[in-house]
Length: 376
Ligand SMILES: *Cc1c(COP(=O)(O)O)cnc(C)c1O
Image (cartoon, rainbow, N blue to C red; front, side, top):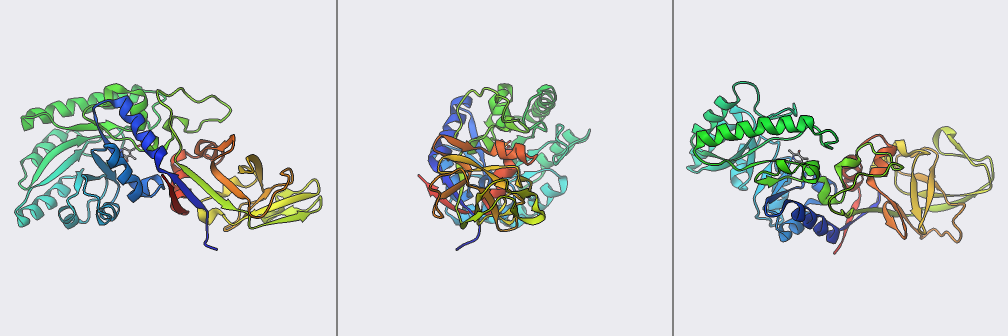
């Protein structure tokens, strides 16, 4: 038996979500964000799907992610959002760096001159995210300096919103206003309109003034709205302009079923003690596989189309569930930890709520540590 769960990724759902974005943003370019192995869904397969559906470009976080896509035969433009260390790879693999320091631009310029070539770059400006990006009063000067460098050509300008769920749009509006001012200044300076992008999923869903030339969604392409951040599943979710289809299912099979008498403790710390003659199922997935320890006595899984509770502490490689109420339960039965089975479903939003995080972390932690299979 291999360790961990199986992540079943539904590529039709991926395509459906891409089309949902297309429907909202009409003819704008779509830059599909596939960082962190496509949010745990497997970047190669998912990227190929996005390109087939018409994505103009892919965005990854680091060079190695981009190289993996190139090695898989993907020739579409790839933006590298954060990496700046391996200068040569940008040229060797025809990648688009996001520049956010003068130094970064300089070293690319030097390498370009050595190679007697010109590299297209996108420049990132910090409009309030406080992470990376040119900032401060010298921003316009810095942009001008980069524009004058030989061997690099600014073909894009970007920024990023700090309120990823945009429940309150006032700060995002301020960021957009700053960004628009910078765009104007840059366009004037370059004597051409600069290709600009700032919209993440939340902006795609709720902030059409931010669409600009291209949008840069991530989470919604995988079937989740960023708006369910911290959402209590008992509250009704905000109405979306489109339906999204979660693309990832995390599943496993029971390792064994044990019959235990009332009063039996389960797992480390004996935090759960049976109150009846019980049947406790053991599943071969634990926190080392991305199933958070905060799910101890605090999550449900699906078996035979019904919800059953996680009981006791989640261990490194094992988790216990109470299957007493499931008639005819067998050791071969499939157990769904994330996703749908019959009429029931466990969403990444539900798991995020239970473990005080966001669906992004649920998808990346479970997805990245599971064996992936694809449904078409
Ligand atoms: C992750 C990321 C995105 C996508 O954000 P979502 O909220 O997943 O849509 C867009 N732009 C940048 C710079 C990012 O880091």
